[in-house]
Length: 321
Image (cartoon, rainbow, N blue to C red; front, side, top):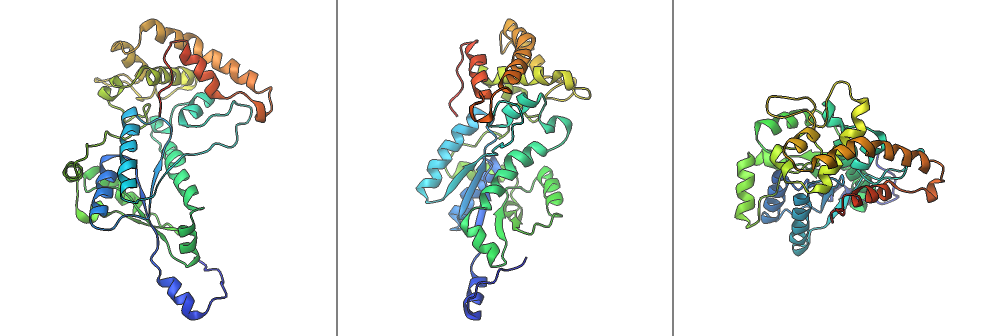
């Protein structure tokens, strides 16, 4: 990595090279990254920055846990930032602010439903990288020819071992990715026990509410707002689906491929409500998009405006995130 000329003396430049590179923790609000943060602080090795990428569709319990951890970090003087991917080009569509808005606007499912991971890269990795490209300690380190140390919470379990083996093959010119949990040989149980020992509750599994990884009990626990969003997302995407049935991909013996079918079978929403969403909402949304295209972007009505009307029809306001 080229080091820009600074006009400083050789001695000053040498001292700058010896400066410690900044340490950043990628905090996903899950068990592994929470245990990692707690243990680092207890060892006197708190990161210089903790970054959380919010796709705008985490489970309500995750946002509540994050609020608690924000207080925990603030009490210990740890800087924490929440970042989001910001869409800048809307073509002729109403502006939207998060992953759910992107899915509804484009009439598609998240990439994980098709066996890919671009939604995670776009809404979790990219906004963290964008923030760090403006963070002065990172810029100073890169100017010294150093890499920023990025801590990632992969544990010593078989699943994370597979993820680690893939990640370890990627050479990053800007970041020195490190995996302390693996160095400590901590598996998920060890991480859980460390959180409990700290006197903190164990966080819920972190994922978007419409992710393939959602379990049946997690869907059952969702508020009506997100249940309706799931039905709407699947209904909006349905005309384009060929190889998958819905957010759970394909039906198995234990669950259907569409979360909507599970919501209906479990009576998590009234059946007439589900039918009305499927029958009318996608068409109404497309009409709204077409009408919005007639306005300049500066005064174009937003997707949030349409969603407010959509949810008001069922008398359930948006949750406070």
